[in-house]
Image (cartoon, rainbow, N blue to C red; front, side, top):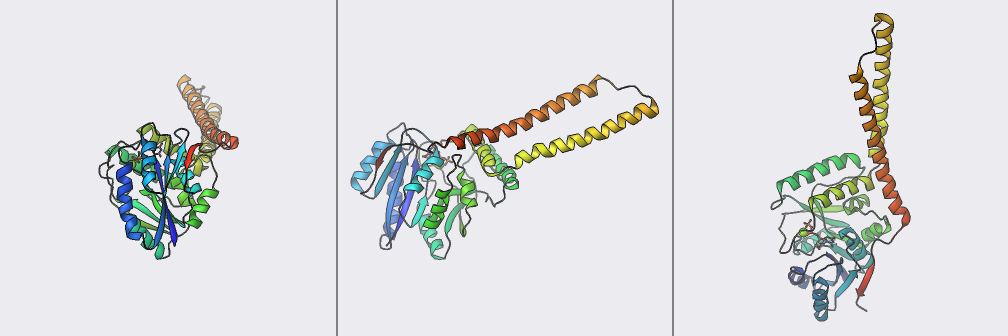
Length: 311
Ligand code: UDP
Ligand code: MG
């Protein structure tokens, strides 16, 4: 029998984790005859009782595995740890807050049976989400898809089922700055999209602030595209060209018309503008260097404090 590994990153989810488990278990019951299963809960350094609740759950279900981090490393690291420790032939990643309806797993299995390697969910609406957040998210996809060379699908979620081969490919990307949305698309394979409605969190609060989303967007851009570096080159060329033309004009004006050098305003604006462009270019380069710095250090992506695993 094939085994399904369910990877669930949890950060301060004491309010929902048990409901999540019960709901998901109901779905797994329907698959009992065909598939074995294992849960891999990753406690991402929760400060509440998530870990002790997980341990209680494990007392009753031997198919629950727990990996507890030494501190909060973020969802990306948690997903990576889960993938790294999964043993199933089919691997599912889902959120602990029931925003990813467990019943979709049944549809995903159908997709795999149809011959797809990955079945991913895609949100068709963003109901229950602040308008400004959806607007920014839309903009992010628009800008991002211009910058990367692979397809980045609007509204694609982390909620997905993958075959072993896909997961092995994902694990083989060992970068420290992990941008899963990009990594998932980058590895390719045959992907099926399932449309799902946006559901609100069952309980508890989202861990994403506007600031962290912005940081995430930036991270994505930097880890999957080097095009921003080209912007400075293009800007440089463009400005040099304009400077050349204006120099020609000034020389001709002086020689032919005998006009004196024009005033202070044009000079100061040019100087300031150039200073700005140079600093921006330096900034872009610095962003990449800082990412390289973190990659070169080659630090572990997460540190495990406790691992409770089926023998
Ligand atoms: N999560 C995590 N580490 C973090 C933040 C979030 O493991 O640092 C988990 C969280 O417990 C949940 C999932 O990632 O299972 C999605 O988080 P959340 O629901 O806050 O995000 P949203 O659904 O609002 O995008
Ligand atoms: Mg959520």
